[in-house]
Length: 224
Picture 1 (cartoon, rainbow, N blue to C red):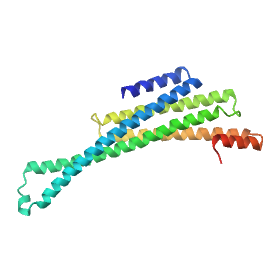
Picture 2 (picture 1 turned 60 degrees about the horizontal axis):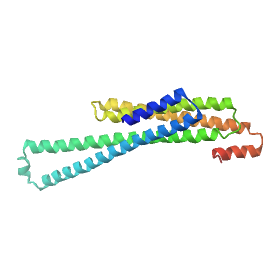
Picture 3 (picture 1 turned 120 degrees about the vertical axis):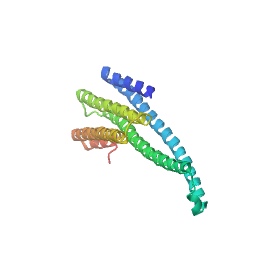
Picture 4 (picture 1 turned 30 degrees about the horizontal axis):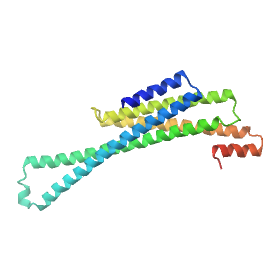
């Protein structure tokens, strides 16, 4: 997680200090690498939890089988220790399954964040090839994209905070609040990016003077 924090800070500095085309390429690589690290960390956590779930389920099944073999009069002779053990297995199983659902949702959020970064790279590449925009307009678009990408870095920090919350004392209510906030932020950033790209594409189509130019713009942006 320290590596993710470092590359996040590096990317932010690049955006603030030198928002050039070259820095955009560097920042895209850095952000995508950070997102992939988060996804990998989440996948590993889910795998560990799923293994623990299988173990707990097997333990629960063993206890249930033992219980089914006992005679009714022997059930009442179970010690409190055995009953407590069974209860703890059940509670632990429920807890692990609950945490898995948390991690899976976080993974979904992070994957959407990765789509945002990929969409940014694709859009920025296409705009620089579009002759219907002036240098000043492209510079403005660069600023907008930089703002969206900077917000996406904050999303990564938020997701990292949620992941760390599983190793610290935090209520389920607070953790759920963080997850919902992260999901809302990613959705908002992704929506802003898609809307901005749509506006730029429409503007390019409006500026196309001939049918040949129109078809060229459609081909460039992959429009039908």
